[in-house]
Image 1 (cartoon, rainbow, N blue to C red):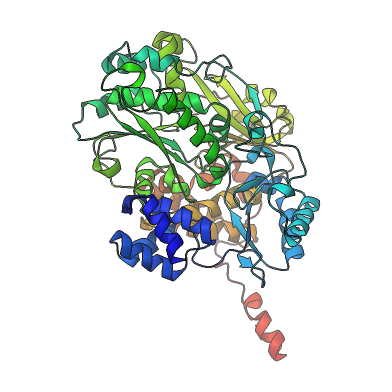
Image 2 (image 1 turned 135 degrees about the vertical axis):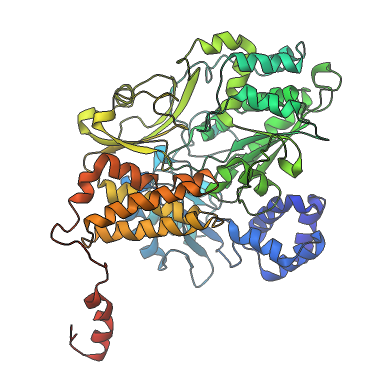
Amino acid sequence: MKTGVRKILEKYGKDKTRLMDILIDVQSEFGFIPREITVQIADDLGMSEVDVDQTISFYHFFSQKPTGKYHIFLNNSAVANMMGRKEVADTFTRELGIKFDEVTSDGLVGLFETSCIGMNDQEPAAIINNHIFTRLTPFRAKEIVRDIKEGKSIEDMFVADYGDGENRSDLIKSVVSNNIRKIGPILERNYKSGQAIEKITQMTPEQVIDEVKKSNMRGRGGAGFPTGLKWEFCRNTKGEKKYIFCNADEGEPGTFKDRVILTERPRLLFEGMVIAGYAVGATEGILYIRHEYKYLQAYLESILEKARESNYLGKNIQGKKGFNFDIRIQFGAGAYVCGEESALIESAEGKRGEPRDRPPFPVEKGYLDMPTVVNNVETLCSVVKVVLNGGDWYKSFGTTESTGTKLLSISGDCKFPGVYEVVWGFSINDILDMVGAHAEDVQAVQVGGPSGAIIAANEFNRILGYEDLATGGSLIIIGKNRDILTNIVLNFTEFFIEESCGSCSTCRIIPTLLHNKLVKILNARGVKQDIDDMIEWGRILKASRCGLGQTAANPILSSIKNFRQLYEEKIQKNKVFDSGFDLSAAVKESCKVTGRVPNI
């Protein structure tokens, strides 16, 4: 074991800032990270054991206990539950004879829950030994358990054909479907890689930035900061070295557009990173990808290698002296908060993914304290088209405040879930028509994932755009047969509790208090004051230092705002106070054991 760990450490030059890569490789090699390996890593990297331990304990896919020869991570997102996850979960536990977070006595199989894995358009889904299984049913769960017990390889467990497009390639071989439903100017098929890189070699970095600024492009991650302005800030900041980060950590439940771009348009993405590097004077790019997409690693690495061979990466790119830029891939290990740019940088440095205090901003002091631009996948893809066609061309799409197009991940109760590229300015009603969901059958639409807002039918005429409904790209359609409070709001609230880094007391405590209040109401013990309390407590969360904490109350607050009647239907009308504590239930088990009758 020590020899294997030593090879992994040497692979990364015993660089403690590459701790994430080291731990990922150890976890993959041994199935867990035992104590003796933690000690060895700490000694060889010159770190304290506590520093190594705190990184291991922070991430969902690291374990200090054996996880089984086969480890099954079943998605527990809201959409998975809408599509029949419970029956699949029950089948796995029954067939394996274990509960979730347990390993079979023979060490063969571990069964675990995990948050959204980027497969909302083909749920229920699971990750088994870094391979994705989609559209699971109880029957498929039985087949998988049978195959595991027979010792089959993961590849031999697939009963469906491989998915479409590059999912079928020899380097992926995945049953995942792309579900690209609508292509626009960013995803169009006629793109030829390298043309934009060749064009910028005839431009100055300042001219590239000016063209991006002219387009009025805003970051596609949700915050909407002007892309050209961010690049300009970074270019004007002095630093020994500068970095470009692509944020492909799309952990927002309901979002999966980056998965499709990484599969079908990775050359477009990498070209965008090269352009950004040229514009700001960076020499290194880091593509930070969520661990759930590890099945794409060999494929993406092969594309980067071909780009180097064609001199679209490396030194003196396309003959331009001094134009040096290369890209490496950094995987996460399961932490939604790493979608926040400073937490992502902390993670890439081998630490817990805790957001930094700002200022300074990453463009001033980012990765390794150097000026760093962090853009998301869709933004960098759009940049290529701006360079090729001009800022005015890009500005001709969309609205004044929301130029260009937007990629949407649409799932839930609709006929055609998938990825849609639309021009900013579409209404929710337009989208419902487009995805095969009749407005009269739709109770609500969750816009922007759990951190966004759940809107009712009276708002379906609202427009997607920064002027009205801004979104990072996730829309979940919720039919009239769904219990919004249980199926959606409770699930999202539990998600925020699970994914909090715990750094801010507001985010560490208040979502749990909100959850308990919500459960109290769902259990018919709530009173009117409980609704008012949740509204008040939700406001306090705005004091959190990152977007996760600031929006953790949104599932409850937006549902109270737009579906207050659902809460009022469940509260007690004739009571002004109820502690929510059921004494009879609390003593029921002890009375049963002792044969006593409760004296209450």
